[in-house]
Length: 162
Image: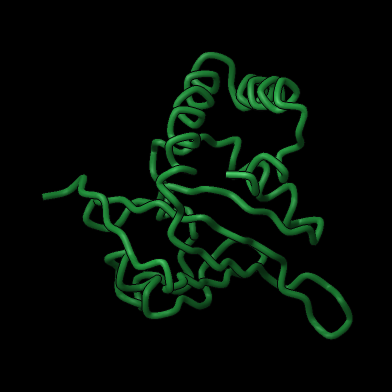
């Protein structure tokens, strides 16, 4: 039965690497197992095949803006599996660099998020998604910025405080 939430333990990490276009070039055993895909089905496929429709596009916009500049980002992400189940992660995404400092791809390490963090993220993402449906990513960004301004924090401080 699809639509079930999958979890993994607090001491396990999901790891994947992508090329510059976001195509998967590596996934650890947990990444492959929880995705429901085989390694062959994942390799060279866009990472967005795991994107759950409950995810606001803004989060991925922020992610790509940051990592393309070589900056790290932390984000909560709801992924979908091949079977239609889902799982939440707290992702740390960074650029992979060659010996001359050029970005050659991206690396993500994901851990299981806390229930406390998800109690904040789930309604926030629902609000951001509603804003996107009525006004696009710009409306979603304005809504998030308004929340951050009210709290007197930036994105990183907010995410890392959860």
